[in-house]
Image 1: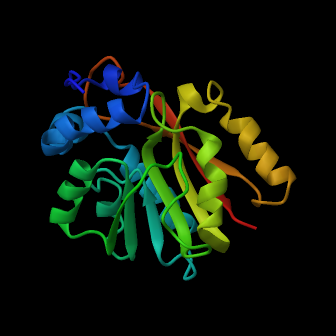
Image 2 (image 1 turned 60 degrees about the horizontal axis):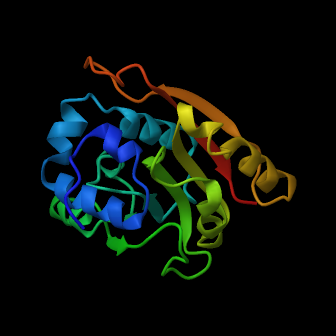
Length: 209
């Protein structure tokens, strides 16, 4: 597949898994600088903060979903974390930081190469947004976690309704798959002016029943 210009708008408009792999293959080497630093991307830090405020001694190990280059995991250095991402190139950058116990190249929209009940927590930032992954992956993530596992997942505000996260979470709660929900509002960016600098998100917090 031909290259895709690396812009945030193009990331929000990805159509399939091959486009996703292509864009992040190109972006991986300078993602931390051109996106994380220059755009003031603070969502990973906010998700990590919300997770730590809720976590207890039963959250090990942690699965970082859509881990990318490890921008979230660098705020959780005292935890045992595995990284899951569809982009081998992004995971290669994460490997160099020595943040993770294990790297899992996998597509969240497919069955994961993980046994049932392995993880005590799931964290995620930058994955539940336009052009990426919706709530359809939540049952599979619940499968690979044990009872009581803590979820702390960042969801871009503009897709929470558009991608029906609210209804999906309500169904999981109604069928006793997850416990009470809590939401923490967060800025996605801070300290930098650009067309998305005022975008907001939610950290969705719950535990598997």
